[in-house]
Structure formats: C-alpha cells, structure tokens
Image (cartoon, rainbow, N blue to C red; front, side):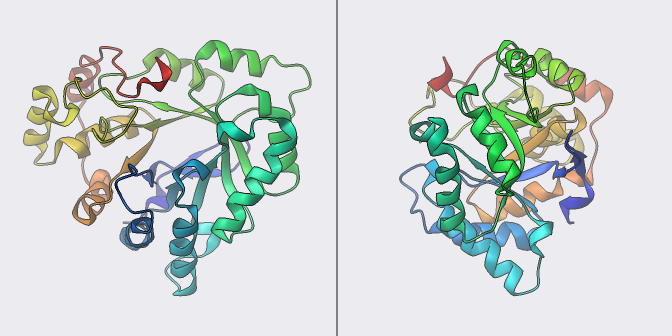
Length: 284
C-alpha cells in the first residue's frame, strides 16, 4: 500500500505522508546500509523519508531515492524528503550552505522539509524556502513556549509547518499536540517505538516500550505486533509518525499500519500509559 494516500495537509499547502521512514542508525551500523534499506522501504510503499546531515548517510539515502526514480518506481514529487540543520551551522550565514551541502550529498534539487532545533536560524531558513531549496520549513524539539515565541515573532514570514519531537505511549505529548493543532502545526513523532539501546543518547535503564503489557494485550487482540499498535496510535491522533528500522521484515511489517484500526477503548488504554518518560536524554 502506498502511503501517499494517507497524507496530512501542512499549513503552507504541501502534503506530508503520515507514515515516515526514519534513516538514523547507531554508529555501529555501516553508513552504506542506508542505501539498501531505503530502496526497500520505497519498494514496499514508504514515500516519506526522514534523514539529516548529522546522520552521515545522506549520500546513500539520496542514491536510494534516485535509483527508485530511475527505475520508475516513483517520481521525485512522490517522495517527501526531510533533512535537518545540524548545530554546527546555526549562524545565519551558514544555514544555506549547510542545506546546499545536504543537497549535494543527496544529488537532489530540493528537500521537501528542512528542520531547525533552535529559533536562531529561522530568518535564514525562510531565505532557503524563498530560494526553492526547501518546500517547507519546520522545527524540532520545541516546547510550546518556544513555539509561541516564534509564532509571535515580528516579521515572521513563514510559520513552521511542523514540530518533530520524541513521542510514544510513555511520552504522549498530549498538551503539546493540542497546542500544535490549535496553531495548525503538525506534530511529527520520532522514537515512536521506544529507542534503540545502542544509541549514545538513550537511557538503558528505561523499560522496553514494545514489551509493555498494555500494548502487548492490544496487539494480541488485533493480531498485530506491539510496534504496529504504537504506530497506529499516533496515526489515529493525527500525528505524523516515523518508523525507524534497518530490518527488512520489520520495514515491510510497519507499512501494514493502515490495515487495522484501534477502538476508542484501545486509544484510552494507551493514553493511560503516559508517564512523561523520555528515552532521549540529550533534552533532559
């Protein structure tokens, strides 16, 4: 099933597929592996690819996208590609060249969405949009006060279309989601399946989300995996969700998130799992 039929309209008129493929991998994983798995993700139906300069694999992700365009699987406009500005390029004069560096690695003419982690670079980001280097601009890891500050900024030309944050049943971000919806900002969830323990930023003492008895019971009831239930939960809340895996079996499984629906009771039970617990501690 192609996910572009399940898309969310952004405030600037563009559309983002509600299910995305995350390409971050821990440093133990060879960067080149991103080529095969991204090609495979596109083959099984993913149309939203989330990457970043800091992942150091944009060259391979770009190669995968271009090879799937070349063989007729997709057109460039079918793919929604997200990249992010890294913290070493926050000075306004470095922003455009950082994006151009990503585009050079990707060998693409534009990205669909470019994200920043701090408001410092916003003006420069607006210029990147005007130059046609990115279709949309957004933010990542902003709380509602930081968003409010940006939205009230005098002379704001383009408001961010989305806010990408850690979001899963243990940290459901319900207040932030409500705030974003009220301002026509789409919430994008990373870490939606918990987190890979190999990551340098993850607290290894936190419980494994996909082993949670509530999630497992709902999964059993629907004859689905706990991972699919966690992804479906976000989709039914109107949250764009990133599914990150370098395992082909799981990549293929994740696309089946559109094949079932959770009941209001299921949604309520998963809401009850919230404990405001972060896996990614670079934000603590």
